[in-house]
Image (cartoon, rainbow, N blue to C red; front, side, top):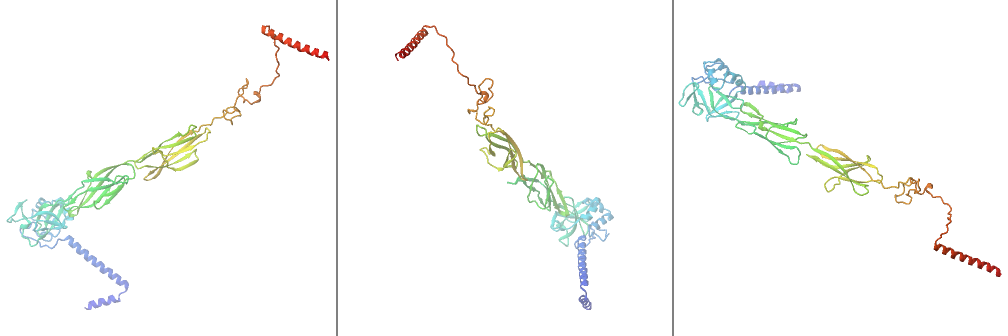
Length: 468
């Protein structure tokens, strides 16, 4: 009591710094004690009584006594080979010299039960168990020079006898021996079931180049799935801890081999990774295609001054037509045209003057892709019809059928306009040409009649003057 009171007084008078140091020391001490206890528990078997009876296999009472407290002690006894059959006996039951180091490092603690099981880490790793000894019992049978008995036929003080168990790489019990006497155990090992049977892919509806991948990897009888690693063949991997389906989208065209590796936890602290050919599958991603294949120009009137420019395209594998931007003669641009004809082709119409000039229309076709919008162009050229014109020099402003549009008809001036001064005919006096008498009968009669009439007129004039 005096010590306690003194310690209490010291604690009350201690500075805060001293209290912190003291607390840390106590905590560290507690951890050390705990670790020591844990280490002792791990390296030592559960409570057992060493057996040095005539039935014990390891009965030389070396290295700490008959039997073995841990795998290292048992290996030391075997190497001592006292009695002289230890090495051959243990080898005949699955523990060869090449296994000693592995047994020391990897052997697991377990127990054998009266109902004929060997249990490690809560799992039954062998059934119909038996053990061997140096003396024959009522129901014993000879195995490799020693006598084997069924677990239920052995008179043990406990229903759970501590054993050391070594497993092979597939988690199957390879060797087991009792701590108390070193006697070997056998039975029917429980073989863990684990495999990768298949990798299946299912396209995700509405999501281009996207798949759900499902792995069929059964695990039972002590095997469990620890890790599932998917390699999608496109430079990406993904790791899961279970077999739930996984979704993946491929973003580039190509042929991909998708594989999966499954790691299983097995009894005895073992693990194994399965990479099977049957757990592979193929995915082909086709690149989207898109093109402006033609820009067709068609005249809409006889004068060929109105034209329709129709865009012909090709697209697929995820590429869709968005719209078209039309540019006329490198200047005016109409964007986002979506007007379509009966065949579903986008078009635009233009009207040109009758000037006989060349016109160029460029169509920039826009396509929708998963990565965004991309474009392709194509173009077409047309020449508008030139209106008919007067070909007479200086009269080009007149229609061809206008009176002003006429050529000169004076010889030597046929290429001049008709109203040019060179084409005017000069005016000259008209002279009547004398006509010789015609001696025909009709003419003679006429001449006679005329002469007679003239004579009668002259006679009358003269007579009239005389009367005056």
